Image (spheres, rainbow, N blue to C red):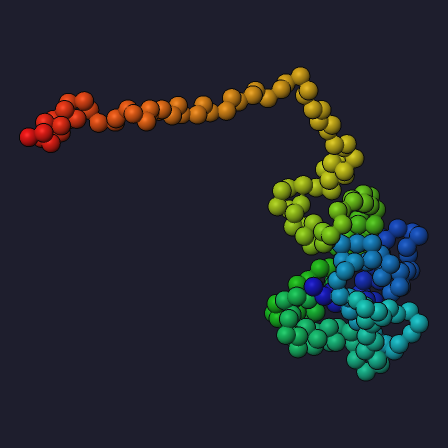
Amino acid sequence: MELMIDTWNVLHQTGILPPESAGIGIRGLVSLINSSRWADEKITFVCDGTPSDNYANGPNYQTIFTGSARIADDEIIDRVASSSSSREIIVVTSDREIIRSIKTKGAQHISSTEFLQILVDDNRAPKKKHVHRPSGLSSKLAKEWKQEFGIDDETLQDLQNTPAPVIKSDTTHQPEKVAPPKKKKEQNIKPDESMLPKELLEEARRLLEG
């Protein structure tokens, strides 16, 4: 997602930021965003006027000053209209004209007051505990693994701190000895003992004598 911020509209909201964050400027806004749910998103600050020292540019940030002949409202509207992925843009503003225009292009919207309140809430929320992850398991796979089995970070931490059970071998139980199979008794035949029936032998002798 990309956040396109109507910068002065956001910074001129009152009664939301705590006293210590009043008048924070763009760089202060960046600091709040870095500790919020939008920390990894692409951020575009659109500002009226000419460049000043109060700006933020970096891998995830860019600041656009519209100059003296153009206002930020028109810049935001034109950028959303010309974007090939307008549905992936969230415009932060409370300006009604901007809101009406960007919604016709499929862009999303969040008001300046709601945006600031979310930043404040996210910065006040307790930080998540660090969870040890086995080496060789990527962040993506770890996330998919946790979602698949319904395991949260607290459960993983408890499992990590739980010692493995000790399995003792039972020396009192000895496996039963199995007797080897008995060999089949071989039939011993004496050399002078014939295997033919006696009656058959007598009949054979009579035939030979006849």
